[in-house]
Amino acid sequence: MLAYDFMNQAQPQGKTMMLDKGLGLNAVDDLLATAGDYISFAKFGWGTAATMNRDLIAAKTAKYDAAGIMPYPGGTLLEVAAMNGHYDQFLVETKALGFKGVEVSDGSTQMGATTRDELISKAREAGFFVISEVGKKNPELDHELTVDERLDLINSDLNHGAHYVILEAREAGKNIGIYDANGNIIDDELDALAANGTDQLIFEAPLKNQQVALILEYGTQVNLGNIAYDEVTSVETLRRGLRADTVGKV
Image (cartoon, rainbow, N blue to C red; front, side):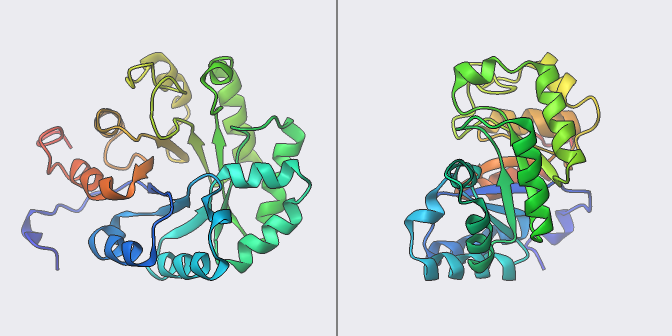
């Protein structure tokens, strides 16, 4: 039973994707003890998984999986593997390490639509839960993407088997995607991208003002990503109306 359980109201909660940038096993244990119930996905950021011992990675994925959290390697790692002709080998190793999902993106590389569709389809065929990502890591390149182009990518990814689509915002959450240079939401772009619903969208929202705005706009069931490991509990309090920004509003 939760402390102050009488204050917890049953309401639908969205998915929270937590960014693991290289946590050790003890840190993972502490995270799961304090906030494991509020994490849906544990993303091993960009290519961090390739810098650590295989046994360590396998131990971490096992801990997340046992806690009901889906671990997956960052999209940049998949991009580099595909760029170098190692995609099949990447899928085999990803499964062997205990990852249950993959992220298909082209944020750091150039990838044709046909290639992107094939990567999603092959990952699904290999038994992976697929999350794709729309947007570029380089702000200049990201700004070249129109809202219509982003919508086309979202719809195409979902049609080819992606379970969710992430809207890119990076760690900083500024000057990328739906956020301006100060990290504020560009309302017109958000409205357009969410016009067909948000159930299968994950909004990267590393900053508190973004988390608050999205929760107030779409409710507690909105899916949020790129949440720092030490901010997971904070996000949960926002969802539950237990922080000043959302008290009495959710």
